[in-house]
Length: 339
Image (cartoon, rainbow, N blue to C red; front, side, top):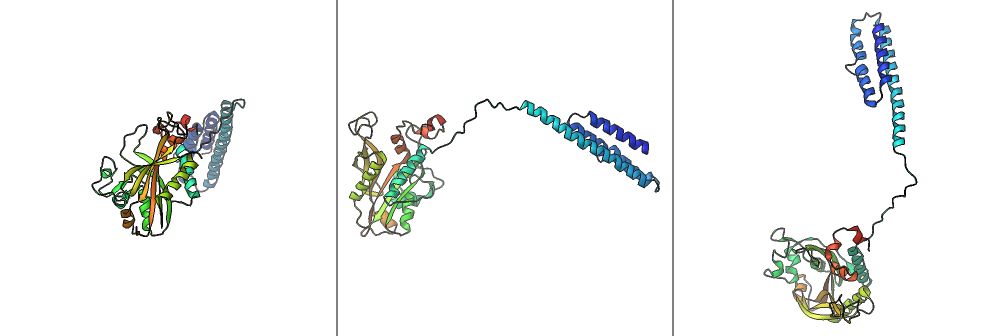
């Protein structure tokens, strides 16, 4: 038994010395110390050793195991050191190379304009209110005085989930939710993403953003609407900006109007930007229809109000002279870096 253990120890130490990779050291460990290893086989044969010799043989086995394990550990440490040295030589850092610059992100043009619009209206005492993007037919259409047979409810224009659930086509539903709370007066704007079944081109997208405003109080007139939008236009486009109103039709306002601003590039004299007219259309507006007030349980004989809605992307396109709406969503760093 003594000769067998000496042979096992000598062979194991020799193979450890020859090992030049971690996987080879692992093979030695398995072959000699594993469950089916040679040293384990010797332990299994201890039953054949006489009781008087077992303590002595057991000590020899333990000494052999300890010698092999120590040699394995020393070899592992030395091998890792050598591999680390080789790796460090291959991965030398050239400190003369220019450093990589950290590219800092910044706000998207839409975000810049959104925050600017919110700043202007919050400064005039308005509250910013958010609403659900998935809306019911009632809040998106019926409560806004848009009947069941109105063309806007056609499936070619609106994304329907089912007969009653849809993706909102406007943020006006948020105004209805707020009116139903019964907390008057109301001065609010409702920014958010809206969805319409439009083909993607330079001026249209199936997903875009709107900012709609609502004021409900006693003795509100069209003059209040004109003064509010005139102040907004001056803040957004410059002190010399003028506003004009053209009669229009919206189901939820009466009377209704389209609002234009004087061209902030040519001052109204006519240029390529305003197509020679001197004016640029920016939003739709009007006095809240009495039917809309009644459906939200507000007495139109006691309260009146005005509403307006503008496209966020349209304002961004005008403010930064961008001629293609798709540029806002293509995530081209060359384009975004301009802002």
